[in-house]
Image (cartoon, rainbow, N blue to C red):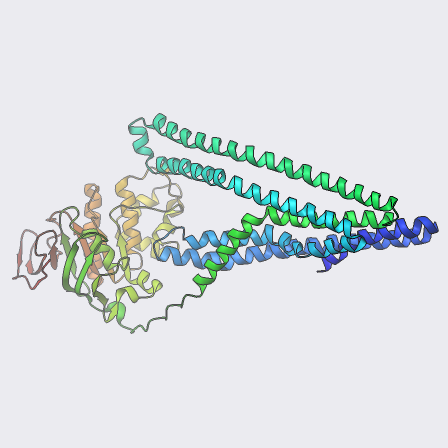
Length: 533
């Protein structure tokens, strides 16, 4: 309010100078008016600076307080870039850059009214001019919308080609695919360039037309004012003041029209954020003290993927602390699906998976992270040091990291690296695939979780890594951890450690309890549990 009220200093100064100072020839009045006008301008500039700083800090506050919790919620749900994140960024960007013009645009009618009060003709010319400017701005927005969206899509596709090539750079090098991928990227970029040319052609022409219209309106308004002055219908100070009032209003409306697209996007984003924040928070579940040490129970679990048949139906079993369950099955038999169900990433269609008396999907995230360790079939390590990856980027002591690395049999390899546990993970450090998998195994074993799920852990491992894995499984069993391992075929070295086996892929998944074991043979009891598929 004060910023825009101080804008009146300029027009009032012109009226006083042209209509009073020139006729009175009072130097003292001129000095006082000039000092007052300069003071108003300096004050307005200071207030404008403060407002920009305030809006910038508000924008940062919005992103800081909303983005972090949205990203956390998205990652928890398995979405790396949640849609609400885009809405937050649009609202934040509009607050920083587009909100001030729209706040000022509210004052444009007041400045038009002042021009009208000086003389109705001047007000009508000013209003007609701004109407034309708004119409041209809306036309520009409409005509540039389609090529702008096409340019964005072309850039997105080109970036996706490079991301895919980076992710599969070994394949690109092995099959000499660089030329083909560069050509595909180039075609997408060329399409983007063509769309940008269309956008620039339309936008440049309309921008030139808007500039010419704005300059022409200033000339017309000034000529109209001088005509009124010559006919004794307005004073010279009033003419220049009306021109300045109209100029303020033109600039305010033009800046607001320029931000109309960001205003629409921010408005849509605001309602999306509001709806997202209005969702009821999940009530923190009541957790019994002995839940992490309870028995793992699958109670008539049925699961199917969308659009397919049941992977398994009414599967029931239990696993006590210190027991090993070996899940055997061919490809696409449901081994990975079962692993993801056990760690809570998937929910059964019917039935429950419980740890003690608590449904595993209701365990708080921090509790589930402490009681479950997971080694996926396809290992991915994050950008960061070896210690950070093993510790899951948590604040912890090096002793706990080293303990997990020793259990996984990777400690000696790590200490031989130039920076030891502080070595950043990259292709240059020369770790083999088996060694990277053992680092991922150490991450799964970190802080000896109650349940450890290893999905196809023996795939692509050398002999020493296999032995380290088998030794780690035996050690974790001795600590009272339940272990679930999925494999494509029986492992003779694991035979001495297996307490139960589950065979998937047949008409009837079979669960077998082993009561007598040796290094050479296992004698199963009669299957204690059967579930019909």
